[in-house]
Length: 77
Image (cartoon, rainbow, N blue to C red; front, side, top):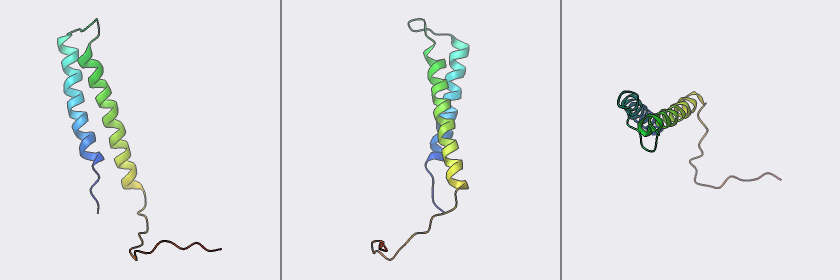
């Protein structure tokens, strides 16, 4: 069983994105008439969704056969 770093990264960005987007919805601080916290929170949530989707796809894929002989694969002519 291998460790997939995409899962904790996706969870981390999801939590921070939700917090940032919630702050953007509640506080309504505008910079140049843009609610920066809301938009970056949404970007982080989208990135988290992509990471979590990739992690779930990797778990669903069948494991690849690994050649531990150390030799380069031979071509058949």
